[in-house]
Length: 287
Ligand code: SIN
Image (tube, rainbow, N blue to C red; front, side, top):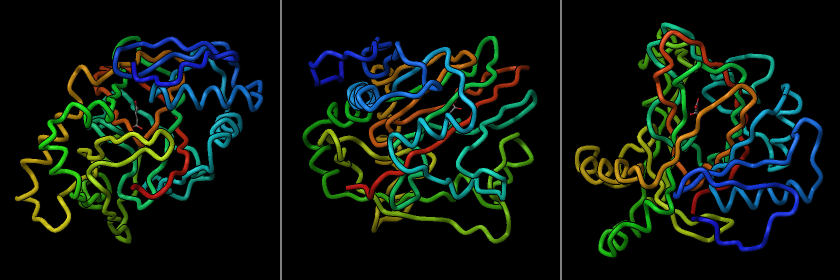
């Protein structure tokens, strides 16, 4: 297991769902409000298990945001800021017939930003009777399983992350999916350069930090030169033994640590709708 902290939990129950990462948290009613000691245990469970899940919760927008704020300031996603009343909550909606969905490639969220969010809290309102699961992958394990030679080579490499692949008028995604993004003519790509291997600011552990949605090339190299190694690293990062799979029900929540995981929404909900809502918690510069 990834957990390094042997101190027992007193306020919550923590039940791992896979060998690599992921645990279900029990004993909490989030909407009722949680004391500081319970929040501290939830935070510890997140650091130990990388993604944590809650069942049978009843959140409205206010309680969703209040819970999220216990872990940091809310992050407003620039590409989902479409002039709606509340940009702090992104509606992740899939309707029958949608050809595309949000998050269908392996990714960490919003890594084109200089300070990508530390985490996201996704709450399920309506889920299909089958399909629509979410996969998560442990990027500590992805890094630790590389050879010493590869680790040495990556130590000095930086990666350019851009949202050019997922937003903007050229992508024409809005016509093909229910959740809309910025595709207006005023949109401009956002780019940041991050280390290929980052050090988690709370655990001090190293993890691989590249993903399909945003990583474009190594800093100082062309796309063509970068592609073979970037492709290897991105595929390596979700080998099955690094992953877990979450089966949603209405009222479920997934809270992932965006600094050391990647995730993917499986696009297999067939004729059924899937309605979720997501907050993001602000993070720090990647080092
Ligand atoms: C996301 O990538 O944030 C969405 C994940 C999901 O809908 O399962």
